Image (cartoon, rainbow, N blue to C red; front, side):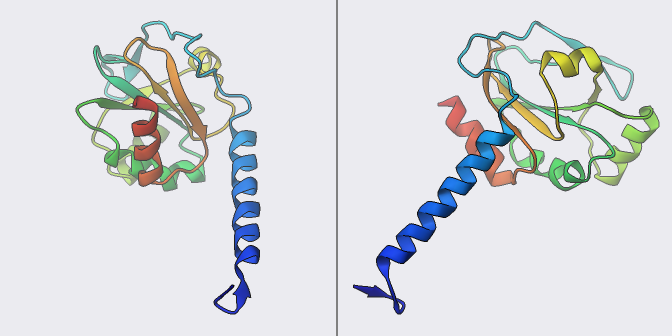
Length: 169
């Protein structure tokens, strides 16, 4: 059987090769991420917001998508707007700045992207706790503060929403 002038097996082969390449890239990106088997529970953590308010990292009874970014990261500039589509009644989205020169750099980043929700200011101890080795890094954390999933690099709004949905169910 020919499909668009080619054998269908060629199409299947090409799709399979593309799928293997995508799976390999995703596996390589997540190689240093925290375990998602429920063995790691993140302790209750409070950080200072960019507004100077102590803010808990997690909300009681809500899953949390923690987005770690750096103001100098170009991929972060492209992806931070996608977080608006994930926030819901069941998923709390937290933006945490790491590797910033000063608070003004974070404030400028927030203003450039018209971020009105709180941005928390992280430090090296938080970076080590979550094993953040690249930006952006995302973790979906369950209501008991165990890691459900994680990702590094750019993610579309649909990709974030799908991951959150799949990890939540």
